[in-house]
Image (cartoon, rainbow, N blue to C red; front, side, top):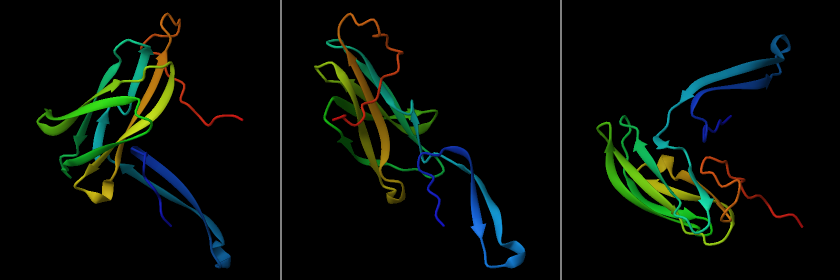
Length: 159
């Protein structure tokens, strides 16, 4: 049995139904519990680029490697259609090495997008680390154009 902990931070519980050929214990539940710690803490966990077309839209996201298992970002890539750009700089947060990403919308048309920044570290067992980038670019004067509004994430096109 293998249990993936990807995307499962904090306390986790999993129940597994076990069937055996032992008549006295033909079936039973096996309870797995544990805490999954972040290898790299991403704050906020995703970049939300929400605003009106033509206006500057950006957000800063910070990645702080766990001090008990330090790592270095060796390279980054983007996955998506190229609706944003970013810069990365090494910094410090509470005395720990960290990386700060300034993520900026460059989309020039109204619409939504869902893309990613992929972080590759010197710890191959944890690659890639993903920073989701969600964009919602609205027309000027849109009544739903407040920066705190949640974007609708694009899904598959209907035919």
